[in-house]
Length: 329
Ligand code: TRP
Image (cartoon, rainbow, N blue to C red; front, side, top):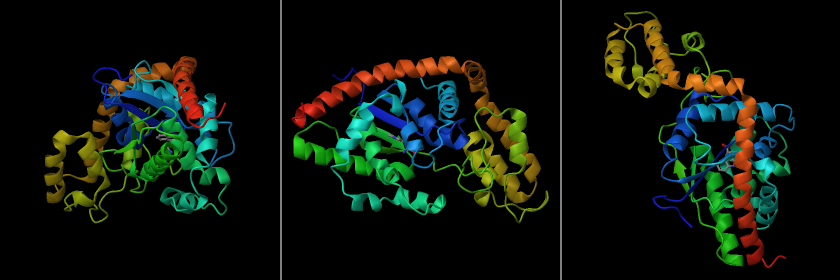
């Protein structure tokens, strides 16, 4: 039964990548926080998916706790929507197996996200589990009968595969699953400080827990318009990375910065100082909570375990529907 005023279920998910960076926040978390009151939410930690690109499991738990500490500090409310690990709810594996019968390997080989990852990570042979990545993601979403999936562009092909699997299941065994919709995040992907894709492995990020000093030091290295060498030189804010950050984190000063950059009056060093200060003040309201949770990671784990108990119930009920529809047992 749907609750009053609730527009449906959101299934959001992320791999356990540890401390969150500004790109995670702008691209995903901000949306998750904003959608909490209109939808019923499920927040999934994709720890099985992490294995598709790294077999070493030694850092998964620590990365999970640090990631969730940041989720909590920016305002994800675990009471409104459970936070849980895929690996702790066995139904994910079960539904993944059943779904693997509903899609061809040729379809999975055409997945553009997989092709991009193979290129980015220099993978020479693709493991079976990596090929099946979107099938596991379909199980994540449909186990909770998710209606809406907030993702960045790179994940949209996976939601498309989820829709195909849901339709196939419903047409073969009867209506069990909703056909989920993709909700693309509104702000285009925030580039890293070197102008490339923001990624912790490259080291071009600002992390949510970074202090004001750390942000200033990192910002000093940010790339700017290469033609603007010293104050007085006219700059081109429209190609400048720091200006992109101003637009997001310092909207009230953007017009002035634009004009003063073009005229040359504003030098890059001062502009970067303004930008670091703006980012620090945007992050400041979260730092108290973040400090608390980072010192109480055991509480974070308790919150996750509680989420797992609640998510488990929903997963169990869906599998009853699935087995009934499939005449299994
Ligand atoms: N594949 C997603 C990513 O890398 C993480 C993910 C796993 C996910 N299962 C999901 C996202 C279900 C949304 C819904 O970002």
